[in-house]
Image 1 (tube, protein in one colour):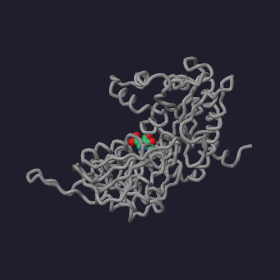
Image 2 (tube, rainbow, N blue to C red):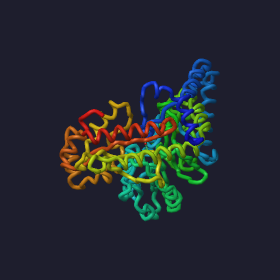
Image 3 (spheres, rainbow, N blue to C red):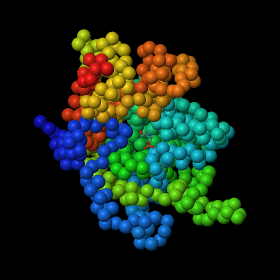
Image 4 (cartoon, rainbow, N blue to C red):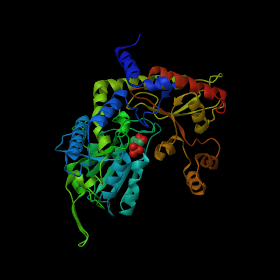
Length: 453
Ligand SMILES: Cc1ncc(COP(=O)(O)O)c(C=O)c1O
């Protein structure tokens, strides 16, 4: 018997995501991207048919229409994050990576200052270290424990006077671990500015910027509701924005530029951070995305994701070879405590040897199941999960040219996994999708990766 929640999501799937059934696809890459609901796409078609939008930098009616959509989308983003508009601003960007780069290139990294990164970070955040290095700021890394959770991170917060920045993900795109948001207040009390990468967290968990007050939040909207692509945001405290030092200017960011006098004046606030012309048709589509999430409700969505994750973990953990040996090695927590709907694992052959993820990916794709393979742009979690031997991995990184994961794996030697499979769930995922993925993965492991399922 289906619960009320089960019935709700079954109807939602039939109404809003019929293309999945039409294509016979089990989509389990929600951490890669959410899928857009039919309703959102219809709303966009209506908008494109009816509205005349122009470059928001002009002042005619189409331009004003764009400006209104942009203002409404900023307000909707702040409402979604429960943020006080007097405290936070929204800068639209191309994606979460671009949002992180706005902070990276403008944060006043100096000798005596520090960048404190979680070992679990997407490369979009790891890239901050190149700006810290350029500014001669110290770099430190918060280590992970065997469950890929931060290992006593509060101990690494040191007092100091120079500008320091802590950057970590609210939820890991590798393991699904939700890191403690209490770290934000603790770090700010010790004088750190905090960048919270919320890209993998906010799609299925409510974040309140009245309760936790990071200086910067990065996100991509397609991870929330699939459409539009190419729009992200840097949500920043007004006071934190003022401390940034923009290294350049572009169209839309300046009050004036003089070529003769080689001077310019940046505009105030978010205007100084939005380079060039915004993706205004894309930004106009955000309202329908937020409406879709509101109709579901974040609480209900979170509960659905927990149901699916529970089923996925149980299915993977109970999958066996004929002799009883497990077919799966899981990375990260094997329960639902402080984690989201992202599960990463490798398949094992009957001797317990990891089957290379790329051949699993091929076999699973042929069976109509969409999962992600690789290291998911999160090398810090990968290094811990796969237990790369430190000295050998450094040598192999240097010596493997041209670099491919397979060549790198050969250099590391037998038995070390390089890459894994990631399954992640969201609004359109059903329990049947999860069961189907688990079944296909079990057959791939039992038959050996080369055979088709
Ligand atoms: C946690 C996390 N941070 C940052 C990013 C980068 O997002 P984008 O590629 O949209 O810039 C991702 C994308 O997968 C992510 O999962």
